[in-house]
Image (cartoon, rainbow, N blue to C red):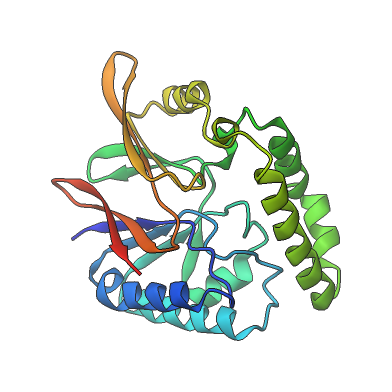
Length: 240
C-alpha cells in the first residue's frame, strides 16, 4: 500500500482541464492508495460550505466515492480555501487536519504544511494571512450573501495576482530559517508542503542529521503528487 499527497490544484470553473485531470487522478491513482492528503489550495477559492456550484458538487461526489472505497482522505487548508469547513468535509468524506501536523509516514515522522506560513519574508502577506485566518473575520464573511462572497473571492484573486507580480521571487518563497525552525521544533527530518509552486526535493541537515524538504507542484500544465510507501518516497509529475 501507499499514500499520496497533492496540493495547489486551484480547481475553478475556468480551468476545466485541471478538473478533468483531477478526476482522472482519482480513478487511476488515488483508488489504489490507502490515504490521500490534500495540502491546501485545492480550490482556487472557497466561499463557504453552502457553495452550490456544479464544480463543488462534482468534487464532493468524486471524493465521497473514493472514501467509500476505503481510501482515507485528509484535507489541510491553504490560502485560497481556508473557509472550507466541517460540513463540506463530511459530505466529501474528508477529515480536516491542522497546518503543521506531524504524521508517521511508514516509520518516518513527517511534518505536513501548506507552506504559506513559511514565507515569512513576505511581511505584507503574513499580515493578510493573520487577518483572514481570524475566526471573527471569517464569521463576518460567511454571514454575507453567497453572491457577495463570490464577488469578494474574485476581487481577492485579482488583488493577489497584482500584488505578487510586483514582488521579488525570493520574497514569495519560503524562508530557509523558518523551515529549519519548524522542522527542529517538530523534531522531524522530513517536511512536505506546497504553496510556492516550486516543486523540488531539498536536502538539508537538521540537528546534524540528513533531512529533506519536498515541495509539491501546482496543477497547470502538469499534475503533481508525492507517492510514499514502506520503501520509498517519490515526487511525480505528468502532463495534463
